[in-house]
Length: 311
Ligand SMILES: [Zn+2]
Image 1 (cartoon, rainbow, N blue to C red):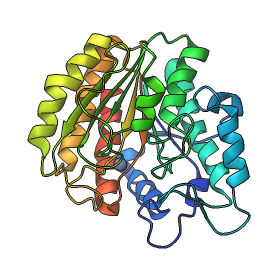
Image 2: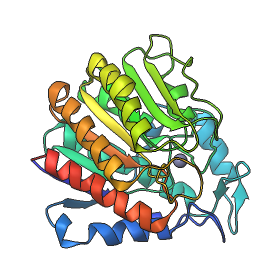
Image 3: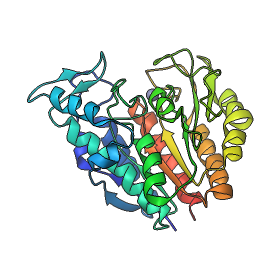
Protein backbone atom coordinates (compact mmCIF):
# COMPACT_ATOMS: atom_id res chain seq x y z
CA UNK A 1 0.00 0.00 0.00
CA UNK A 2 1.56 3.22 -1.14
CA UNK A 3 1.04 6.81 -2.13
CA UNK A 4 0.08 7.71 -5.69
CA UNK A 5 1.18 11.03 -7.20
CA UNK A 6 -0.78 12.30 -10.19
CA UNK A 7 0.12 15.25 -12.33
CA UNK A 8 0.34 16.22 -16.04
CA UNK A 9 2.62 18.44 -18.09
CA UNK A 10 -0.47 20.27 -19.41
CA UNK A 11 -0.82 21.96 -16.01
CA UNK A 12 1.96 24.27 -17.24
CA UNK A 13 -0.26 25.32 -20.17
CA UNK A 14 -2.97 27.22 -18.28
CA UNK A 15 -1.70 30.71 -19.05
CA UNK A 16 -2.88 33.34 -16.57
CA UNK A 17 -0.80 36.19 -18.01
CA UNK A 18 2.03 38.24 -16.49
CA UNK A 19 1.94 38.98 -12.76
CA UNK A 20 -0.83 36.53 -11.87
CA UNK A 21 -0.09 34.63 -8.63
CA UNK A 22 -1.69 31.38 -9.91
CA UNK A 23 1.08 30.74 -12.43
CA UNK A 24 2.79 27.77 -14.13
CA UNK A 25 5.90 28.14 -11.93
CA UNK A 26 3.80 26.74 -9.06
CA UNK A 27 3.73 23.38 -10.87
CA UNK A 28 7.46 23.55 -11.57
CA UNK A 29 8.10 24.11 -7.84
CA UNK A 30 5.92 21.12 -6.87
CA UNK A 31 7.46 18.89 -9.52
CA UNK A 32 10.97 19.86 -8.41
CA UNK A 33 10.45 19.06 -4.74
CA UNK A 34 8.77 15.73 -5.48
CA UNK A 35 11.63 14.71 -7.78
CA UNK A 36 13.91 14.49 -4.70
CA UNK A 37 15.01 10.98 -3.77
CA UNK A 38 12.97 11.22 -0.55
CA UNK A 39 9.94 10.75 -2.79
CA UNK A 40 11.32 7.86 -4.85
CA UNK A 41 8.67 5.60 -3.27
CA UNK A 42 5.76 7.45 -4.88
CA UNK A 43 3.82 5.71 -7.63
CA UNK A 44 3.75 8.29 -10.43
CA UNK A 45 1.03 8.53 -13.04
CA UNK A 46 -0.05 11.02 -15.64
CA UNK A 47 -3.49 12.44 -14.94
CA UNK A 48 -6.06 11.39 -17.56
CA UNK A 49 -8.80 13.82 -18.66
CA UNK A 50 -12.13 13.52 -16.87
CA UNK A 51 -15.29 12.81 -18.84
CA UNK A 52 -18.15 15.28 -19.21
CA UNK A 53 -20.27 12.81 -17.26
CA UNK A 54 -17.88 13.13 -14.30
CA UNK A 55 -17.94 16.92 -14.41
CA UNK A 56 -21.76 16.91 -14.71
CA UNK A 57 -22.10 15.33 -11.26
CA UNK A 58 -21.44 18.85 -9.89
CA UNK A 59 -21.67 21.30 -12.80
CA UNK A 60 -24.79 21.38 -15.02
CA UNK A 61 -24.25 20.98 -18.80
CA UNK A 62 -25.27 24.61 -19.41
CA UNK A 63 -22.33 25.76 -17.27
CA UNK A 64 -19.87 23.69 -19.30
CA UNK A 65 -21.44 24.98 -22.51
CA UNK A 66 -21.02 28.59 -21.32
CA UNK A 67 -17.33 27.95 -20.53
CA UNK A 68 -16.86 26.41 -23.99
CA UNK A 69 -18.44 29.49 -25.58
CA UNK A 70 -16.25 31.81 -23.49
CA UNK A 71 -13.02 29.96 -24.32
CA UNK A 72 -10.80 32.31 -26.39
CA UNK A 73 -8.94 31.40 -29.59
CA UNK A 74 -6.00 33.57 -28.52
CA UNK A 75 -5.10 35.69 -25.50
CA UNK A 76 -7.27 35.74 -22.40
CA UNK A 77 -10.89 36.07 -21.40
CA UNK A 78 -11.66 37.04 -17.82
CA UNK A 79 -14.43 34.93 -16.29
CA UNK A 80 -14.33 37.18 -13.25
CA UNK A 81 -11.92 39.88 -12.08
CA UNK A 82 -9.14 37.43 -11.28
CA UNK A 83 -9.98 34.29 -13.27
CA UNK A 84 -8.42 34.42 -16.75
CA UNK A 85 -9.10 31.71 -19.28
CA UNK A 86 -6.57 30.98 -22.05
CA UNK A 87 -7.14 28.80 -25.16
CA UNK A 88 -5.78 25.72 -23.35
CA UNK A 89 -7.58 26.25 -20.04
CA UNK A 90 -10.55 23.94 -20.65
CA UNK A 91 -8.29 21.04 -21.55
CA UNK A 92 -6.23 21.71 -18.42
CA UNK A 93 -9.21 21.77 -16.05
CA UNK A 94 -10.52 18.47 -17.48
CA UNK A 95 -7.14 16.95 -16.55
CA UNK A 96 -7.26 18.50 -13.06
CA UNK A 97 -10.61 16.78 -12.48
CA UNK A 98 -9.25 13.63 -14.12
CA UNK A 99 -6.40 13.49 -11.59
CA UNK A 100 -8.95 13.53 -8.77
CA UNK A 101 -11.08 10.86 -10.46
CA UNK A 102 -8.14 8.54 -11.13
CA UNK A 103 -6.85 9.05 -7.57
CA UNK A 104 -10.31 8.17 -6.22
CA UNK A 105 -10.37 4.98 -8.32
CA UNK A 106 -6.92 3.95 -7.06
CA UNK A 107 -7.70 4.63 -3.40
CA UNK A 108 -11.20 3.13 -3.42
CA UNK A 109 -10.00 -0.10 -5.07
CA UNK A 110 -6.97 -0.43 -2.77
CA UNK A 111 -4.40 0.07 -5.53
CA UNK A 112 -2.94 2.85 -3.40
CA UNK A 113 -3.49 3.74 0.25
CA UNK A 114 -3.67 7.44 -0.50
CA UNK A 115 -2.94 9.91 -3.29
CA UNK A 116 -1.77 13.44 -3.96
CA UNK A 117 -2.89 15.34 -7.07
CA UNK A 118 -0.42 18.03 -8.14
CA UNK A 119 -2.84 20.09 -10.21
CA UNK A 120 -3.64 23.62 -11.25
CA UNK A 121 -5.73 25.70 -11.43
CA UNK A 122 -7.33 25.12 -8.00
CA UNK A 123 -11.02 24.24 -7.77
CA UNK A 124 -12.58 24.93 -4.38
CA UNK A 125 -14.06 28.35 -5.26
CA UNK A 126 -15.92 26.97 -8.30
CA UNK A 127 -19.62 26.75 -7.48
CA UNK A 128 -21.90 24.42 -9.46
CA UNK A 129 -22.88 27.24 -11.82
CA UNK A 130 -20.10 29.76 -11.35
CA UNK A 131 -16.36 29.84 -12.10
CA UNK A 132 -14.49 32.28 -9.82
CA UNK A 133 -11.37 32.89 -7.76
CA UNK A 134 -8.93 31.21 -10.23
CA UNK A 135 -11.24 28.11 -10.28
CA UNK A 136 -13.32 26.56 -13.08
CA UNK A 137 -14.32 23.02 -12.04
CA UNK A 138 -14.60 21.96 -8.41
CA UNK A 139 -12.43 18.85 -8.62
CA UNK A 140 -12.77 17.86 -4.96
CA UNK A 141 -16.59 18.05 -5.04
CA UNK A 142 -16.65 16.08 -8.30
CA UNK A 143 -14.41 13.39 -6.77
CA UNK A 144 -16.76 13.13 -3.77
CA UNK A 145 -19.78 12.58 -6.00
CA UNK A 146 -17.80 10.17 -8.17
CA UNK A 147 -16.84 8.06 -5.14
CA UNK A 148 -20.52 7.76 -4.28
CA UNK A 149 -21.73 7.04 -7.81
CA UNK A 150 -18.98 4.66 -8.92
CA UNK A 151 -17.57 3.13 -5.76
CA UNK A 152 -20.56 2.98 -3.46
CA UNK A 153 -19.05 5.30 -0.87
CA UNK A 154 -21.87 6.26 1.47
CA UNK A 155 -20.24 9.16 3.24
CA UNK A 156 -17.48 11.35 1.87
CA UNK A 157 -15.70 14.17 3.71
CA UNK A 158 -13.61 17.09 2.48
CA UNK A 159 -11.26 18.92 4.83
CA UNK A 160 -9.94 22.18 3.40
CA UNK A 161 -7.00 23.99 5.02
CA UNK A 162 -6.44 26.49 2.19
CA UNK A 163 -6.35 30.02 3.64
CA UNK A 164 -9.46 30.91 1.63
CA UNK A 165 -12.89 29.47 2.32
CA UNK A 166 -14.01 26.88 -0.23
CA UNK A 167 -17.34 28.51 -1.04
CA UNK A 168 -17.77 26.26 -4.08
CA UNK A 169 -17.40 23.02 -2.15
CA UNK A 170 -19.68 24.34 0.57
CA UNK A 171 -22.31 25.24 -2.04
CA UNK A 172 -22.06 21.81 -3.69
CA UNK A 173 -22.39 20.00 -0.34
CA UNK A 174 -24.89 22.26 1.45
CA UNK A 175 -27.99 20.11 0.84
CA UNK A 176 -26.23 16.73 0.97
CA UNK A 177 -26.33 15.18 4.46
CA UNK A 178 -23.94 12.38 3.35
CA UNK A 179 -21.26 14.84 2.25
CA UNK A 180 -19.21 16.72 4.83
CA UNK A 181 -17.12 19.85 4.43
CA UNK A 182 -14.85 21.32 7.10
CA UNK A 183 -12.66 24.35 6.53
CA UNK A 184 -10.08 26.39 8.39
CA UNK A 185 -9.51 29.74 6.70
CA UNK A 186 -8.73 33.39 7.35
CA UNK A 187 -11.92 35.33 7.94
CA UNK A 188 -12.86 37.87 6.81
CA UNK A 189 -11.09 37.33 3.50
CA UNK A 190 -11.95 36.42 -0.10
CA UNK A 191 -14.52 35.04 -0.99
CA UNK A 192 -16.39 36.34 2.09
CA UNK A 193 -18.14 33.09 3.07
CA UNK A 194 -17.15 30.68 5.85
CA UNK A 195 -18.80 32.10 8.96
CA UNK A 196 -19.34 29.65 11.81
CA UNK A 197 -23.11 30.01 11.37
CA UNK A 198 -22.95 28.41 7.88
CA UNK A 199 -23.67 24.77 8.78
CA UNK A 200 -25.54 23.11 5.86
CA UNK A 201 -28.84 21.24 5.99
CA UNK A 202 -27.62 18.60 8.43
CA UNK A 203 -24.75 20.29 10.28
CA UNK A 204 -22.63 18.72 7.55
CA UNK A 205 -20.67 21.96 7.05
CA UNK A 206 -18.12 22.95 9.71
CA UNK A 207 -16.47 26.33 9.37
CA UNK A 208 -13.59 27.15 11.70
CA UNK A 209 -12.58 30.70 10.77
CA UNK A 210 -9.24 32.11 11.93
CA UNK A 211 -8.21 35.77 12.25
CA UNK A 212 -5.49 37.59 10.36
CA UNK A 213 -2.26 37.14 12.32
CA UNK A 214 -3.23 33.73 13.73
CA UNK A 215 -0.58 31.03 13.51
CA UNK A 216 0.00 27.36 14.24
CA UNK A 217 -1.35 27.51 17.79
CA UNK A 218 -4.76 28.81 16.72
CA UNK A 219 -4.83 26.55 13.64
CA UNK A 220 -4.12 23.42 15.70
CA UNK A 221 -6.68 24.46 18.30
CA UNK A 222 -9.31 24.83 15.55
CA UNK A 223 -8.40 21.37 14.26
CA UNK A 224 -8.44 19.78 17.73
CA UNK A 225 -11.64 21.40 18.96
CA UNK A 226 -13.78 21.42 15.78
CA UNK A 227 -12.45 19.87 12.58
CA UNK A 228 -11.11 16.54 13.89
CA UNK A 229 -13.97 15.71 16.32
CA UNK A 230 -16.65 16.62 13.75
CA UNK A 231 -14.85 14.63 11.07
CA UNK A 232 -14.59 11.59 13.37
CA UNK A 233 -18.26 11.97 14.21
CA UNK A 234 -19.20 12.02 10.54
CA UNK A 235 -17.06 8.89 9.98
CA UNK A 236 -16.49 9.10 6.20
CA UNK A 237 -15.68 6.12 3.93
CA UNK A 238 -13.25 8.38 2.06
CA UNK A 239 -11.43 11.55 3.12
CA UNK A 240 -10.60 14.18 0.52
CA UNK A 241 -8.24 17.04 1.35
CA UNK A 242 -8.34 20.46 -0.29
CA UNK A 243 -4.65 21.05 0.31
CA UNK A 244 -3.96 24.73 -0.14
CA UNK A 245 -0.72 26.06 1.30
CA UNK A 246 -1.48 29.79 1.21
CA UNK A 247 -1.98 29.91 4.99
CA UNK A 248 1.85 29.76 5.13
CA UNK A 249 3.44 32.77 6.82
CA UNK A 250 5.38 33.64 3.63
CA UNK A 251 2.34 33.56 1.34
CA UNK A 252 1.59 36.94 -0.27
CA UNK A 253 -2.21 36.51 -0.54
CA UNK A 254 -3.21 36.29 3.12
CA UNK A 255 -2.11 36.89 6.70
CA UNK A 256 -2.12 33.58 8.57
CA UNK A 257 1.26 32.45 9.89
CA UNK A 258 1.47 28.69 9.46
CA UNK A 259 4.79 26.93 8.85
CA UNK A 260 5.57 23.61 7.17
CA UNK A 261 5.37 21.75 10.46
CA UNK A 262 1.73 22.79 10.88
CA UNK A 263 0.83 21.26 7.51
CA UNK A 264 2.69 18.06 8.41
CA UNK A 265 0.89 17.91 11.77
CA UNK A 266 -2.53 18.44 10.14
CA UNK A 267 -1.81 15.72 7.58
CA UNK A 268 -0.86 13.18 10.27
CA UNK A 269 -3.95 14.06 12.32
CA UNK A 270 -6.21 13.67 9.28
CA UNK A 271 -4.55 10.38 8.38
CA UNK A 272 -5.22 9.11 11.88
CA UNK A 273 -8.95 9.79 11.54
CA UNK A 274 -8.92 8.26 8.05
CA UNK A 275 -7.32 5.10 9.46
CA UNK A 276 -10.01 4.84 12.14
CA UNK A 277 -13.05 5.19 9.91
CA UNK A 278 -12.07 5.17 6.23
CA UNK A 279 -9.47 2.39 5.98
CA UNK A 280 -6.84 5.11 5.62
CA UNK A 281 -8.28 6.21 2.26
CA UNK A 282 -7.21 9.78 1.47
CA UNK A 283 -7.17 11.72 -1.79
CA UNK A 284 -5.45 15.09 -1.47
CA UNK A 285 -5.69 17.81 -4.11
CA UNK A 286 -3.50 20.87 -4.41
CA UNK A 287 -5.51 24.09 -4.12
CA UNK A 288 -3.69 27.41 -3.40
CA UNK A 289 -0.15 28.33 -2.33
CA UNK A 290 1.53 31.27 -4.05
CA UNK A 291 4.99 31.65 -2.50
CA UNK A 292 7.04 29.20 -4.55
CA UNK A 293 9.53 28.15 -1.87
CA UNK A 294 6.89 27.90 0.86
CA UNK A 295 4.65 25.97 -1.54
CA UNK A 296 7.40 23.48 -2.45
CA UNK A 297 8.42 22.86 1.17
CA UNK A 298 4.82 22.55 2.34
CA UNK A 299 3.91 20.09 -0.43
CA UNK A 300 7.05 18.15 0.51
CA UNK A 301 6.04 17.70 4.16
CA UNK A 302 2.40 17.03 3.25
CA UNK A 303 3.25 14.29 0.74
CA UNK A 304 5.92 12.95 3.10
CA UNK A 305 3.27 12.61 5.82
CA UNK A 306 0.90 10.85 3.39
CA UNK A 307 3.69 8.40 2.49
CA UNK A 308 4.52 7.74 6.15
CA UNK A 309 0.91 7.20 7.14
CA UNK A 310 0.22 5.07 4.06
CA UNK A 311 2.68 2.39 5.13
ZN1 LIG B 1 -6.43 29.95 -1.35
